[in-house]
Length: 258
Image 1 (cartoon, one colour):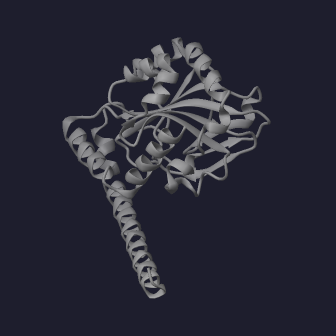
Image 2 (cartoon, rainbow, N blue to C red):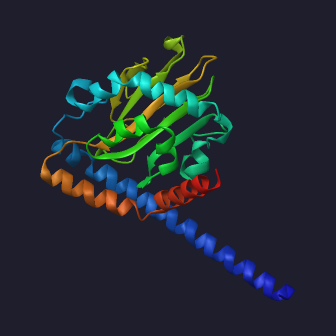
């Protein structure tokens, strides 16, 4: 290829990338406006209320997770023996680069971006069996936070999703390893779930010298049928965005290369 041809090609690639960035920004802006505009409606459709932090008794599957936590912890311990192979959050999801820095927040994904990662599920068969029994499961992964790391304040994508953390490896100094959800300070406990609405402003602090690991699970909020219908449409639309497509592409690439 001639120099002129190369320059022309570079310009075309640059123009295409600028167009993609422009589209991404505007899709993000539209998405945020759509979410905010419909948050009150989704909350009104909820069959479990709309508190920042839920009582675990509302969700029957939580008891089974807590009963089996030591089995999950054993499989986690095996995964952590190859800690260097686990990707940082932003390596999978570039949109998280503002809250995930360096390799301080790692993710071992079972289900993410609409994709089941068979390799990871096979490494942790008991964990996979337990999470696959959860009604309307959307996401499941080991969330691994390094000592001394702070995840800045942020909000989740939609009120149509509820999140739970099963404590698996929690620093002894629990007072200094916690999450703020809205105005509530929440501390993890090994073998116990913490279930919350991540559309409330929340941030995580690990001001200890130990690693913190939870099993993070997202599932659909129990709602009346109009709320379920709207949420289904929204979740379908979101699968076409760069947020999901880029994450899915990176996840599959990591899965193939490890």
